[in-house]
Length: 348
Image (cartoon, rainbow, N blue to C red; front, side, top):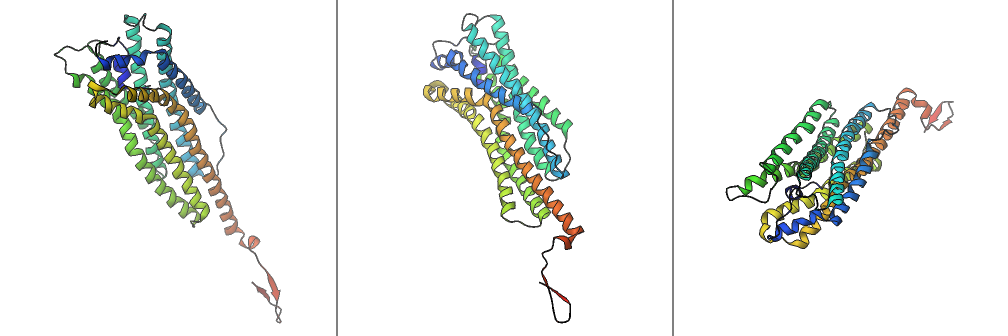
């Protein structure tokens, strides 16, 4: 799981005299790390399936073929980032399961823990940016605007690096004893930057992506009606497919990361009296759902790709029929004739 709570308390043994600190020891139990281990394996499997090459569908309609290729390109990089993030959770869980507390306060463990915390946070922020960029690119694609791949890569890899560096450098400097603070330390300035730069991209995706998908749906409606010159039941079903797929993508993201936001709100508002039952429930949901983002993405984005393939077939078929009508209209007309008294044929 990727969350400032576990980043704060993974590198040193929690103090025993504070109930909140004692509760944080749940992050180091075999039960919790076994859940993280299993969910990360499932996530890696789903993302690996997304990366594997697949049989390309030849689509006569160049416009929609271009949209599909643009989407696949971003989905591939999203899956790569998901694999890296889930691999970090896998390694961290294995490390804790193997060594328990024997090596817990040693320098090698602390260094490994910090490295994995940086690794996991960085690549999950990368996945959030690729998720946002996918929605932006689809919004641009349906307006027939060109893709900005170099800009996408710059944004998706550099900004998460800046966010991770600022958030975790303030947390781990001058040492990894995040919760053993001196009276001179400013608690807010110690912890808040990490929370802010972790959850800012999540909130942006949750707010912006539904708006972009809604705008994209409007452009799809315009394309369907203008291309087919009608809006019947088939076209309505086609548009509903896009709406459902976009809604499922948003729902999957909300499902994976809402527990983290709720956990952050509770930690900052009820630190002196954390509800242990609620917190443990949230932490286990995070342990299950955060790595499973990769699995959900492989399923949901494939559904959207399948929807686009259906539309491409429909549009290409309509295009072929239109060409036949324009070139050879008499061959497909339904003509019934009869002769009148003058010998002329009457066409009904």
